[in-house]
Image (cartoon, rainbow, N blue to C red):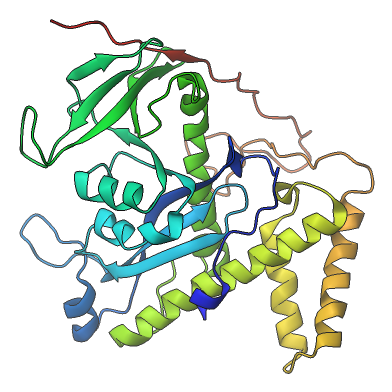
Length: 350
């Protein structure tokens, strides 16, 4: 079912969904707690303490290829806690053809790089300081070409790949290193790629929608059998993709950015419609969509985006954080200045 539903849904021109003609996607992963049965423990594994004893629940690992502009899942892989995210990500390389795929620093590796580039995908991956650290050629904009080698091998090696390294700082902080196969500094400016990297966090927003809102916070899956656990994980991904498609349809109808539509509101109304109607018909589905569109339209009548800031307020007065008392006038939180990205050009090294 997920394979039939999944895929990109962003229309051409949607902000955050495209970069210089390439659809932008992000690869990242999350874990789901599953019931602690012997078969689940054997199939998936889980975290362990310092003595190697099981700690907490077994966990299934899910890695997704997510469209950054919409949070739609293009592809996904489901494995166990013991399996690494890069291995699951490699299995999705064929679904990323023609896209610019962003990943964090847990993913760089020659096998993954070759899998995606051979599938006609482009990469923008954060890397640790020890990866591709020796410049082969410094480019005109201060970025440089370097060789990323197989794990544990130093110096030039025939099994490595040539990458472009972009280094920059955010607000004068630590140096962030990005690797990309887009080697032309004129066609793909370093400043644009550095600014684009933050779109990777859209995958985290997608995971929050699945784990916190859709599944529920601090919940474990229900299935005591590994095969049923996998079916449940795929079901969550399929439901999330369906809700994303509803959001995109509402956004297209109202001609607004899909970020203006609350995932939580759509989830609640979808749940209510399922409870009220045990058997869906095309007429009933159209009625539900009309109802959702009406609710979205009411929120947008004044043309002003809803306020997305609030005072910090916690239920526990003993917390170290301040909280808002009953009747206290609401004040906006402090406004954070825009981040300043400063490129960190490479020095010519002897």
